[in-house]
Length: 136
Image (tube, rainbow, N blue to C red):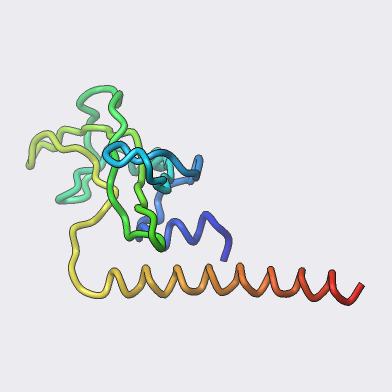
């Protein structure tokens, strides 16, 4: 599992590209760092109604970067950043595209499994490198 697929699994949204991942100072607690994944929606996904999934006309040019809070990564908060395009649906009106789906159930369990898998694979890589260096 590469890092981009890990982030997509953590967010539970496949139709995007990971542009950047890094740490920033928390806006409300400057002494803490937070993880921020900056993503870009695929072109065919930008202007879909979040209710009926119908392709819609764009309402205006996206200029605001929106942040969604994801599952924390250890002791650090995790945020997803994306330009928030607005579309106008003939049936539902104007809506902002949402990356985080408001669903209940086992979403956090899936995220936890993905995080454990990724961290385990990182530890395995580190152990292999350590053994390689020790053996000569």
